[in-house]
Length: 404
Image: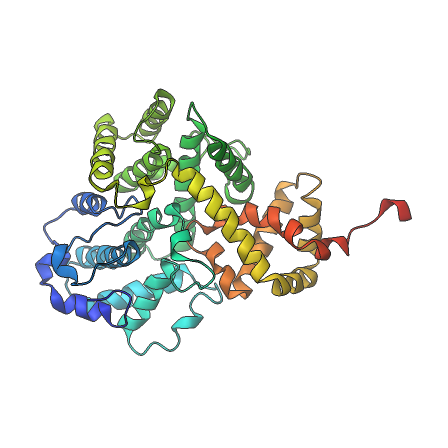
């Protein structure tokens, strides 16, 4: 079975028994733990739950991730409906993704030539892993994006129960996860240059992304609306991702540990969950540290920031003409981006910039990265680099005070 070739889903379904795929006697929490054991929750899948019989090929991290995502979605549907009707499950997964991505032009345009529902789903899963975005190299895919893929599974669980409002739920969950990740980074006692850069990126992101309970721009656990309303499984996932955020040297200092303690206290998770999380991550890193990129770098935060900045710059330059055209047609966006270089924008202005920039991204296929899981955290880099890399668009509209 080759997850990078067409019709890998039918081959997967035909190659394994129902009990191997569905694990019907497994609880959601146990299945989550199994996904964590193969690295899917950490964003670095080193294998699948189906073991060595999955493929005769040596699969990549991306291919294992794709298989694990499909497996998790399939098992979630079958568990929720108490059935093993795979065709129905596949149709529901497709319907879920279409509703989740409704209105995002360009994201699903590549799917129109699909001949079967399984092929359509294969395209969707590839898109979620960003494999179809030719402007990105696979090695430049951020760690955070793959770790956020489990949020799709949580959203699918919610959608099967309550289809309405799924986009708002998905956005809220991603926002809460990203916010808590960067609060964890901020808690580090010894911050590197790249820790500080990433914290700065988050703080600028929060102006565009986050609506706090108090309406303030200062982000804390206490004013992140929605944290306490999470389910037990959502809380476990949040804790795992926050732990990854500070796990850059196989050790954890006291300030990092205190933040994690404050987190579990605030979201009302038992203390043994933190102990269990730290032990599982430690065992995973010891077992696979030499095989996965997350632990090959002394600081994965540095990797994330450098790759993110380089990727955004590359996307701007490769789409220079189209971006200039869109900016000139937008009018207001051009003015606001120009003003953002000399003053702080108001909350209303930041909201306009965010919405109008996302509209621009929808019209340019290679910029759909900003519409994918975790992509919105890169918006401040887009705001920062567009005026610098496309100076002509702004210079032509800049008013010279000497000529007044």
